Image 1 (cartoon, rainbow, N blue to C red):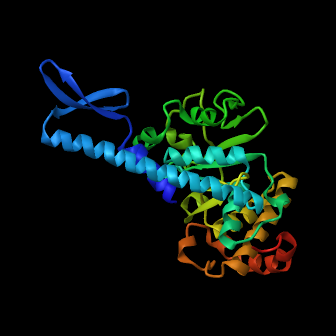
Image 2: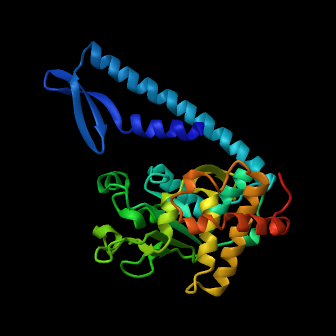
Length: 327
């Protein structure tokens, strides 16, 4: 967390450079940002202080960030030796890119199987590897975000550009697809809640056909409206990363609902049900302060919330079978 704060401040406050330049017979202080130089005024006591504060502050933050980065390198080796790294490397690098762009938790959250890495971190356990194994990651886009905010935070070359900055082999499965894939077959899906207006899907905003276009899926509105949890988890090399995921109670109830849909693939139905019972068991055994009666869950349909008690009761019987030894 300390490295994250320092590195973000370094990028936000001290991006670019600052220098005095002679123009004619006088010197002026210039600040470079986004490839453009801007004059801050003629050389004098005030601009001298500005110049010194910029370079001193930047050097201090560089020293702090560098020291913290070295410490993280040391701890990552310990984490690897203890087998604590969990998140696959390609997924971790994508999540870090989203976090660095300030998209994580503000524009989108993580949905699907990768959420389990956050929930096991909350509970202090390791989930059986079969239940967290996956070859894709779901990015849940909150379409309530203003277009102005989204445009300011998005990379110039869009979602696909962000993915190719992580792995150059990422490409769209087809023009205008919601799914991108890399050379190893790892899939990234951009999903969003179903629009209430069938005439204007996805809110009616235009999307570049050469970039990821979010696909609307029924039921995701519950996850978008539910409370969010931000967790620091460890990747396969032992390095930390931040994940923003739906509340585990919402996840469990949503998974049960998905597992009972007639249009759901039978194999995925079984996995959905297993994950729902697993997360409910984690809550009952390790996170008892998270009540299914919490008013914060009112975004979920009442009929679905009424099933929480039965889900929790059934999960208690299967919990020991789906967990490895506790930390």
